[in-house]
Length: 428
Image (cartoon, rainbow, N blue to C red; front, side, top):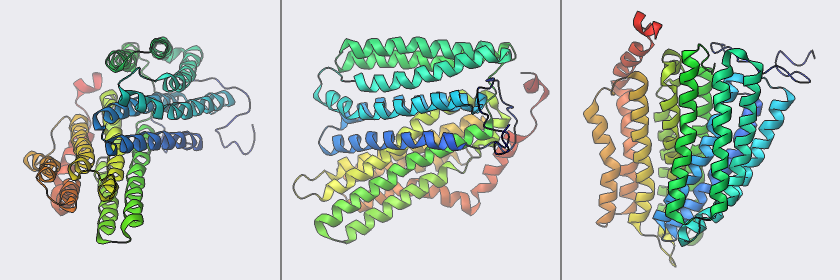
């Protein structure tokens, strides 16, 4: 063993066995952080295409394409992250298969503009490159699961189910790419394929639980990985703000509008970040491991919402274009809609983790109405800045309420979650 390995990297191959699910101090590895950089690129392409489609007068087609793009991308990331949390041994084969997945993410990202354009034109859906990249990612992940099934008898059954479901689903994706369906049939097939893929973890974990071999993912590591991808998605709100401010200042100089857009965009990014991290996801998952699958699936909607908020902020810049101005209502919907989705998803995730609705339910419902009010006001001709501030007030109100005393009720709910479970729950 090299003196520099520090207990992690080994030359040659190592057995791919389950890691200690209770390992303390488990954190994201440099390889995982490098892997995430490819998703920075993929999120950026998807958000840019969404902004372009909305600004160009094709919001419905762009939204459908964006949901497909983000769901495909995030799902590929999800399975890698779960696997790495449970079985990462950091040998050369694990690293090489991870590199192959990174290449697949880039191929998928390259295929996003043709996908958006084909759905916008209502012709045959050009999903070939997206599928090619996705299949590369998923086949590499399937090989990792099969390897774990071979090396670790304790987790053989769930790992084998993961590998088989992932592998077989790719046949469906390949057939989809070769079929040249139009939009509606493609959406149906995509929905079926995602249903099959999403059932894989449910079945695998259920079979593992019945045989004492649930995959040993680490709750704090998994929570950190999802938090890091949330921050990556929030990067799109920063880029969207920069794009809008650049567009406004290039056309009109440094006006009050440019300053307002920058202030609203930065505040929005910060507020969404603040609200997300009010919940200690790692502690919650440690206390309620059975909650993980819906929690993880719910994050798909959350990542979509955050990246779409960035695209919406990009669209805001188009309002000030003298040649092809975007309607204020369109820009407000592009920002307020995703913010509403983010806040609603965040509430549902919190309620799911603690098995209870947040305290002050009426206040939370009132907060969720603010983005809707912003859209209504934009429809009747209210200024853009008013609508943006109303949308921003949605997460900011939650933060202010929390800091002014709401944290007490919040901590009481979390204390109930983290309390030692009853004997019946321990047996379950």
